[in-house]
Amino acid sequence: MFRGSFTLTLDDKGRLALPARYRDRLLSENQGQLICTIDLHDPCLLLFPLAEWEEIEEKLQSLSSLNPQERRLQRILLGNATECDMDKSGRILLPAFLRQHASLGKNIRLVGQLNKFEIWDETTWQDRLAADIELEQAQAGSVELSERLQDFVL
Image (cartoon, rainbow, N blue to C red; front, top):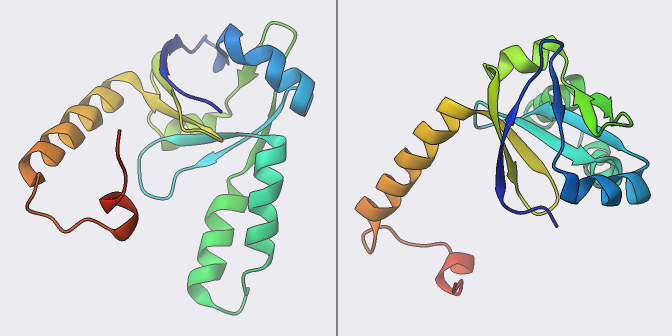
């Protein structure tokens, strides 16, 4: 499981060094093979270990290419999915088109999301985090929670 957030720096070639605490696991369980694609709802990228991505591909394959909404989902996720193999220094190269999609600058934020990471531009992440916290505080008690959230306790 991936958790926590890490402030990282993209080098001039568009590479980022993954946190040391995850490198050995990614190498042993996935041979350092990762898949990066765009997020459907936020201006960030999604980075999956290969094994996790293969499960998503199976789900995407079960969708109908005749249904426009399902075909659109396949097109967006699969069409932007890129292999990002970790080098011996624990770095991955993010292709320019993915960096542009997420408006990534030199300073980025890698955010653990259990089975994947989100990759954000640092400033965009800080703005989104502040807006999300503000929204949660403003809506506290006034928005009907989903059934799953009603039973969720920290």
